[in-house]
Amino acid sequence: MLASCVARDQRAAPVDASTDTDAPTGGFSLGSFAGGFDDHLVLPPYFAGTLPLHGREETRESPGLYLPADDQYFSYAVLWWAEGSVDLSTDALRTDVATYYAGLCMIPSATVTLGDPEAGATGTFSSRRAGAMSVGSCFGAAVPPATIEVSAAACPDHTAILILVSPQSGSSPVWADLHSIRDSFTCW
Image 1 (tube, one colour):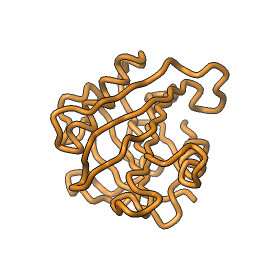
Image 2: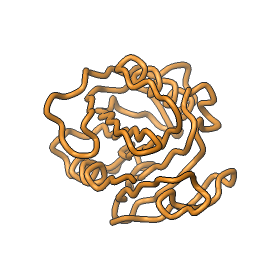
Image 3: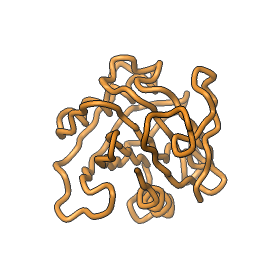
Image 4: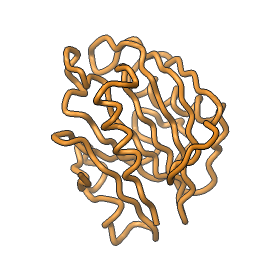
């Protein structure tokens, strides 16, 4: 299901980058969780001002994202729609993800591991890295260690970086939903 963005942060106008006529040329579409919430912010977001990216951020939040007892707890997708030159090295992406989550979760640091790009990845996001993340707590509750997948795509005038996060096992239904969101992405 493709969804338009609904803004929680009043600093950004509630528009979808795929339909924003005032946005720079090019755009994207990205699926959503059924019954979930879509949000957007500017890059770098206010909680991670040192993140070296400029553009916009889109989230696709599962219905159970904030419910610690739910099977979808802390499971969601973050898309960075970045302008200009972006360092896509494994080290830079690891640092960027750690900076983002330390700010989001209001913790001194986040522990992020990230492997090298997978060989043979296909689709728009042909550069994928798997890893793990530990933040301890976020949104006022304990968070178990999470699996992350970080993918990058070169679009005509932006770089798209998609982060998938969930503490659930890779065979869980929420990962099927996350991969469906990833596979729905198109850019122009």
